[in-house]
Image (cartoon, rainbow, N blue to C red):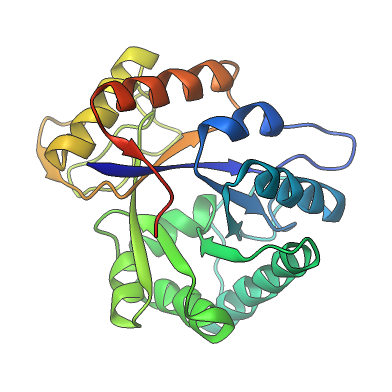
Length: 251
């Protein structure tokens, strides 16, 4: 069995540091780099691209809503045209740094509220996918397993990577439990790792309401901004490999 480990990085801004990008890079295979709308700035974007290239980590664009104060986690009502142009703009921005450093953009993973809304909103999903196709149809689309975004990507001919979350709980419809819900996060690192292994090996996850939900685990998301993020990244990689699960970038 094979799985990719991705992490949202490059989310510092100016004098404000978020996450342990440099320390966590050796344990992941794909980096989703903020494009300046929900987090990140030009200096941070360039620095994170260079870090990813140094460690041989696949570089992905992580476009979000234009909401620095809300960190892109607050829903916004965008028209299809606004969503398309917003994503296209952010892809272009990050791609400039990747090209300047001699690398190649590998994938696109929407961020936060944009990601979660596109998982259920077909029109929004199609607008995001159109921006990716028009920019570079060879890019891989990372999206929530079984979501409208994955379906839109497949219908447009994009290569897709169905994503699962190790530290988040799920609803019966396969969506993530809202961060506002006290049950949104897995309680311990051990439980999170066991959920990850089960998702990869069995292709299913248990919802908070008890139902068994079918999922496809092509790529696992870990978060790089928690207090124990670095320890957890090392731990989960070690545990997955102990189960003879090969950790590698989506080809």
